[in-house]
Amino acid sequence: MPQMSPIGWLSLFIMFSMTFILFCMMNYYSFLPIKPSFSSDDKKTSINSLNWKW
Image (tube, rainbow, N blue to C red; front, side, top):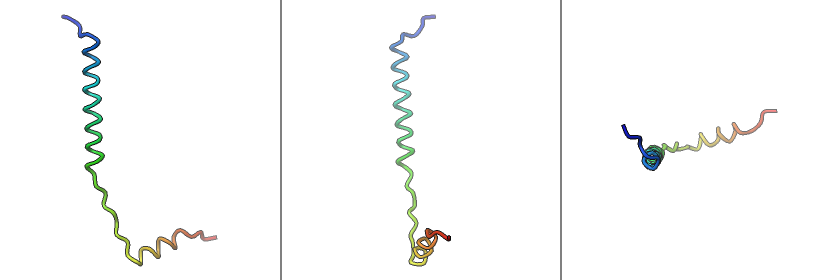
């Protein structure tokens, strides 16, 4: 059985790497995070929670 040439392994590795990177990029950019809407009461509590209680 003939062995595969090194250039064949290199082309397979490049194809796999590009497919993997494309798949990861598609998964990363397809997710749209939901931005929470803050009301005036939420802003007061978040500002007050940042103060240190000494």
